[in-house]
Image (cartoon, rainbow, N blue to C red; front, side, top):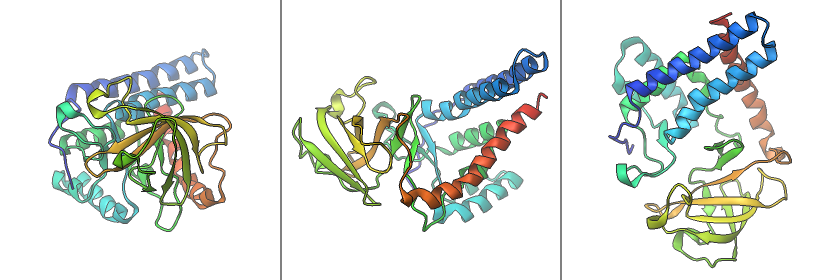
Length: 284
């Protein structure tokens, strides 16, 4: 477990974020009660507030909460015990809160685990938003799971976290601008990308933060229409870390491979709906 000693969330940030979410929920419920919003408008605006205050907060801190299926039972038991006795050591039973971007100035690498104080602050934020830890239940072993996560912008998704069985030689520097590379993930799905840009680590910034950019398709996630794809490397491990791209209306998880996953996630969707209902109920 490569746990960071760097804290990226302050108490003041956490408290302000909670106030903003609660204020938004109260405001939209009040507007609904006054007849100035429909029930659907109230719901959608509260979802927007939750997206900004919780998921947006995680993205802005470059944090991703994910738990391996094999660790879920142990994590859940440890989490419930922590809720009873407050022993923070229980939260170290397995890895579950990760950085999804490197920060050279803070000595943080993509894939490093967050510090214990940051973990506790995220759990406090979840409580304030009525988000139960069961919302993060991983897909059981044996079910093929799409490896995607929300990105930093609307419609942006991240594919994979070091799931690439073949990287086309990109991590080893075997490429030419204009060359087409085929990346293959652990499901055997292919990403075909024509490389148009390479940015050395020393030149990366908020405008060019990825190692490679190009156009192509991602089997299992996109239609046949090419789009811009960004490729991020884990330089320590000399392998691809993840991809980023924007999804459009013609993209879908349309492979039979994903059917069991979609059925399993139906329960997570019901939990999400209960989160929204509980936020509304606070101010109904």
